[in-house]
Image (cartoon, rainbow, N blue to C red; front, side):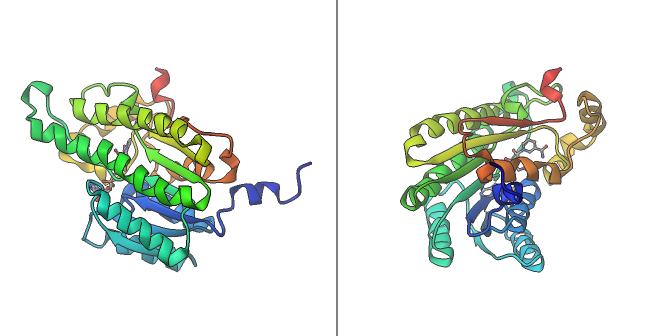
Length: 261
Ligand SMILES: NC(=O)c1ccc[n+]([C@@H]2O[C@H](COP(=O)([O-])OP(=O)(O)OC[C@H]3O[C@@H](n4cnc5c(N)ncnc54)[C@H](O)[C@@H]3O)[C@@H](O)[C@H]2O)c1
């Protein structure tokens, strides 16, 4: 039978340790703070050296949580292994990982040089692969965990008016990588899921080629608006927590209805 505090316990992350990449801005920053508000201790990872990571840790401390930071690049497996080792030495284990680090830009395919293609694939896809590997090494030792990769609706549909074949391909890769690892690691009790956000108001969407299109993004979305960044927190808390204990290999689309049309 269901106990009185069943739902509170289901979503509680107290005693859990989390690791978040891209935690210095936008979706990763908000999810890191949300995990802390549910009780997790959080190691925040980002390549930024401009204070974004420090802001995240300060916010978590201000709301009574516990967090530390690690500055590194998801293209370097050694950085991720060192950061995960920090989670182990500071907090003893790793239960939850959210891989949100990513970049976006646009260029017509016929004009795109190999270097531009490769950089997006290296950060958005190989970076997630590196992250999952480093995280799963410790999670396997700890008896399991939950990995959440931030993909995109661009891994499912092609955004009208945005010439970003490299980005779209990287995100389709993240969705299928997540399903593949979910199956490889099912007997290690490591759940691997992805979240595919629709247009979300973050610094990524203030890049020059996007700003003038914001109105169009809103009108193309059935809900007629972009997501607030906080609207990515609930889906992440769900997948991180025991509420999703039977979910693995799922891509949770959070897009205001976009891919229905
Ligand atoms: N904003 C949107 O509309 C939207 C929609 C769908 C998916 N996404 C995805 O959500 C994720 C977060 O995006 P956001 O909108 O919060 O963007 P953002 O630019 O605010 O945050 C991305 C973070 O990733 C970090 N990062 C970039 N390259 C890195 C690297 N090599 N190593 C470590 N960290 C690195 C950045 O420093 C930044 O702090 C991305 O993967 C993005 O593709 C965003």
